[in-house]
Length: 207
Image 1 (tube, rainbow, N blue to C red):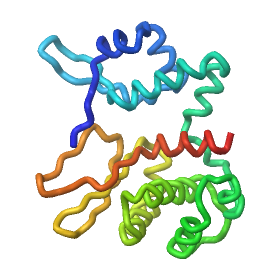
Image 2 (image 1 turned 135 degrees about the vertical axis):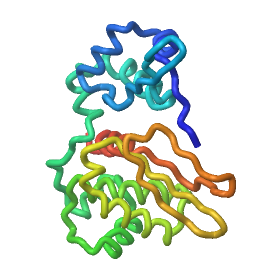
Image 3 (image 1 turned 30 degrees about the vertical axis):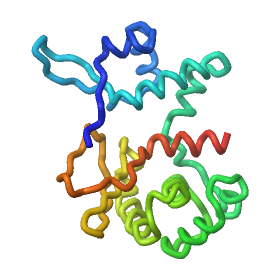
Image 4 (image 1 turned 180 degrees about the horizontal axis):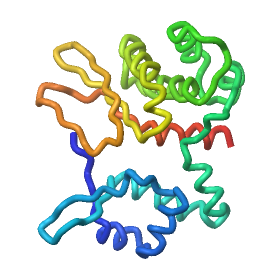
């Protein structure tokens, strides 16, 4: 599965924004640096973007900038919620995750009831994928282990999680700064989630 890209020119036309607006939003950290993808074309170097992500982000910016400053928007979009500390009961009480998923997480992660950034993201991803039915409990344990083993990577960079199935066997991949991924035809993608989008969802629930 290769993520569809859109050229800068097509993006500006489709979104109805100027070159100046786009790069102002970039400077304000409203649009991640790693979404600006430089590629060689027959006319030279051009800039492309992950189409679905950039259009969704621009739509959010245009919808919310009437009520929030660019700095407030940047804070909302930023994945940096590393100073956060919540109790497990509070995470459930705020409807960020269900009690059943929280119990599953605590049983398998074997930590305490204090939730910092990494653990909150992990339990939220489990909630999202288990409640949607995209993964089963065995896959959830595998996915959780991948996240736990790579906490430092997830904190610092844009990352996607992909769960695949082939011949009854499941695999979980953590993709850093993803520009697309490919599998053989017999491999099915059971779930694909952007961790940056999950961070934004958590922030909106905490707001």
